[in-house]
Image 1 (cartoon, rainbow, N blue to C red):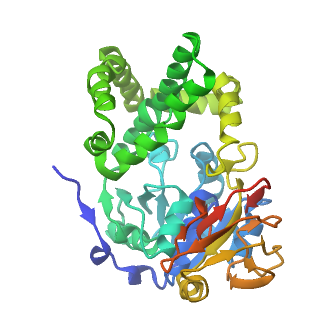
Image 2 (cartoon, helix red, strand yellow):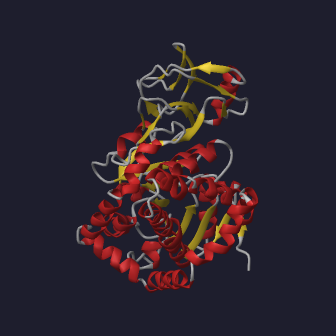
Image 3 (cartoon, rainbow, N blue to C red):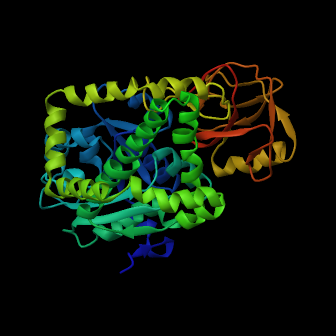
Length: 443
């Protein structure tokens, strides 16, 4: 039976108009929810633990920042945008004691803590989920473009009888009802999300790539060839799948590749693989995986860090690092720093919608040479030959030094063409840029 899909017409943003919304956490998802909701005309505050490094970032974006407990007291509806393994402690210390006599709504982005009973919610509050199916920077960028990232909603506890209305209004505020919101349950979201991560998207794909690389190198092939065939080209195939499904991908590849796909693929992912997947799913469904993860987290992450270190030392990482340095169009990411920090080239910030017309009027259709980004002193924009041609309203999203010995064209739609390569998204809008030898850090 097809899932229920909600769109803009099913959600009433006005339901949240006179309420205080708190976003607890200001990470990837937290910042995008907070900014999108605010830009939708809603009253948003941010709750963070005392001493959080995110507090300054949230204040610079214009938010009132409170310690978590106070934000909970002030809020009518709150989103728990805190890492899974920290949620239970924050719930016991800061959230549950400050929910008052009831009537509040607590939203989650992921079902793990509720479904596996790491958190035991009070009986006098609504418990729901609004989970965009994309990273926070994409949620923000799509909203700025007038689009949206699809999301899931789920209702675990509906004391008021209005939990669905609240969840849909929140989803509309972040732009997700523009794309479509699917109704699910905490159980279904948690279990399918964990399975996808472990068996296919992260665990399965990582092991498939590494074993393919090892097989070729052990057979005497050059590591660089193994890297290209087993890792680099994976993105090209996945992009085709995302655009038009598996059949669409097969339509776009050669007949030889197609024949190898349909006759050899089942030998790699075979009955033994299916059995392992079913066992992994049973461990997820029974709670065995979550219990193991909680124990690992509480005992200091010794095995977790050991396994991550082993992965970092795999030969494919050294080979890949060398080859990626030869590919200026590939976005460089600093995996040693905070998650929000990226090594990027010079950026053109296509900021809030009100700024787009100015970009198009001044830059549309002509090739422009950019020398450097503003220095972060408060004026954010792109400098063309020493003259500011676009100024932001929420502060800079990147910093760095010029000059940049290339230029690019911006079309009337605001999309970079010509010499430019797409580099990723900034917190406030779409970031397009050119790569060069220098490094620029996304804030």
